[in-house]
Length: 330
Image (cartoon, rainbow, N blue to C red):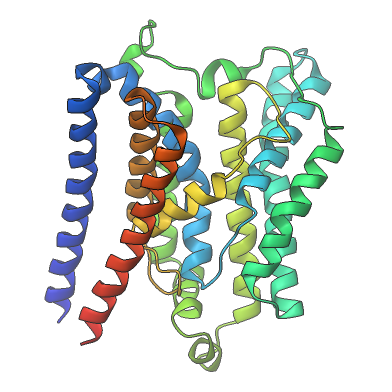
């Protein structure tokens, strides 16, 4: 049975990669050879990196049986906090203030996630409602902090290095910006965390069957709070990546990103019912979303057509995951 499960896992990985390659090749035919150019691939990876980084935390939350509809608002909050810290420095002492800006953006996201986790466990209200309220309230808080203004700090290391395109410059040997490589490292770390740590196994246990997990001695409430805090921290890091692309703290930024992030997880095989999901699948799902977004723009598709296509893909992915789950139970 173990050998059959491993074979099924390999088939699943190959199938997802084949779909990703097929969509990429289809847009290469529609758009032209320029779609497969190094610069365009770099652009796809840069856009997808934000979805991947936030998706790492979202995957853990969904595996634990939760959801976070406030991810986009948390990303915007992180952007504003990062911008405010760097603007306060004024570019005078980057060696000190750059790490502080990164820590500040990540800490803001972690605090939001922790508060949401505490509300979910203490009030015993479903995550959908708590995070739906968070989607609105965190966005409002972000606008209040920024005084409804975009915050533009002076030139800084994050903007000049973290997500600045390298193709066409002397650094083109690097292939992708530092932020893309950092996202890849974070994805590997998150995958190892889920697979080999006690908390990672508890996350799967809580999402698979909360009552059984509690009977087995798993601290369910504490696990939920921790997983939301981790998810918030990853959303905060995604906000730093988004800021680094623009050098701008936008209180209205990252609109609808929660849709793309959840879509990446679902397309990657993470179950909305909990207990099932992989980091690899989320990375593939985020790349697929990035290819669809950029490919549709370059193909000249209207925005509404892009939204229709992505919506249909989400429905198809959920339906496919349900069919696969029924086959495994039968």
